Image 1 (cartoon, rainbow, N blue to C red):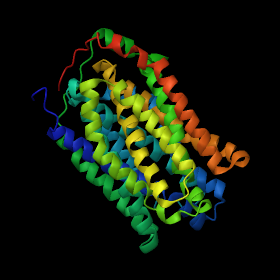
Image 2: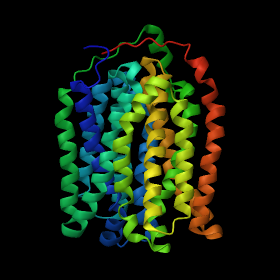
Image 3: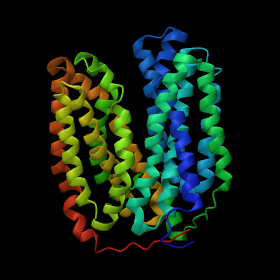
Image 4: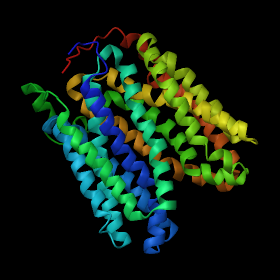
Length: 401
């Protein structure tokens, strides 16, 4: 394999696996609360927990996924994640009360944590280090497409089909992923005796990649802000009477990300992360401020464009930074650490901003979030941005598969 080659067979297969796993996740996420209320008569709080316990399961497994990747191997861990996800998806057919549903959701989330950590680690290993920004930008498009297609399928099937049909589609997506796994050709990474000794035992350095924590803290804060959009867009749109425009919000967002992401990736590789991150954080903050003061459909959709440029760039660039600063043998831990923090941000964000809404309303809440995003400019500088020049002097040896 040429070291500079990006679009390899393994890259494409891994992206497709990630896409189908993400479709399974997003399709179920948009309907599971409604399913719990209609089928089991659950209270809204129980139904909401049925959605969020998935994230709890993913969070719990992120702590061990990195170590699992090192011990089992990348391909074997990926297969384990996909198979366990398929089993959990099939168990939705048998979950006949809310308690069984909660158990299934937790372990489904755990399998998702394994699979997505594995696919991210595989792509970090197979792309050339000098093209890491571009490679991760292209790979993450598989996730972006799933965020558009998954919820669309969920809403469409819920209106025109049945829940059994929905679970069948979700299971089919994972069957396709499972069929693709054997076609991956990955060399199992052999560790030295010293590396094996270092990975032995239950200690902090075996659960998280400590150097990745600063950029992950930035990611946590920004994902927390982004989660306020995902969680309260529908309610906010009703309050400001822009429901029709809001229905196109994430379609516009996804389209902008699809167009801008490859450009962002190439710029990241050519000029470094600071040239991306500072403008991206500012653009995201500007979009949030516009969003908080939107009175027309055009303003709301312009905010979606700014989110696509700003948050879209941040999402791929922070993962590329985590890859960039991590030696190859610890790539699995780096990815599990990154996703652990981003999941915490997505999970705690709705709860925290929900505490603000009764006091300042939705517009006030989104204004506060915009101010927090502006503060992230300083946070990024302190935790990572000011160190970029010195970090460029360190050359990390890259071992292509």
